[in-house]
Each structure stands twice: as structure tokens, then as C-alpha cells.
Length: 59
Image (cartoon, rainbow, N blue to C red; front, side, top):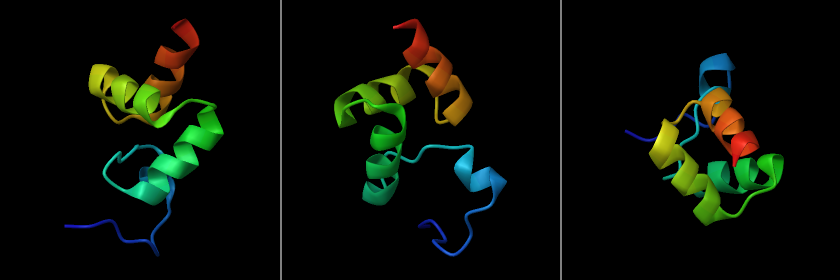
């Protein structure tokens, strides 16, 4: 099942889907990281945007 691009509510913004190119573009720009860094962070801490932000701050 693909993302509903019309539904960008709180739940959608709270999770990072690295399988959606537009989300990867958004999050790499927002967090100032490369695609590889974003994918590695999601792999290590899960898709929670909050957890990924905290993880990236520590590294």
C-alpha cells in the first residue's frame, strides 16, 4: 500500500518512509544529511522522525 499523498497529517509527518523518493528528498533537506545517512539512521533507530533527529544529533 502506498502513501496517501493527500493526507499529510501529524502521523504522516512523524514517520520517515525511505521507500518514497519525495519523503527522502524532504527529510534529507530538512535534516541536512545525505540519502545514505538518512537510510542508515532509519535502519538503526526506526522510522520515527523524532528518533532519527535525536540519533543524528548524537552522531
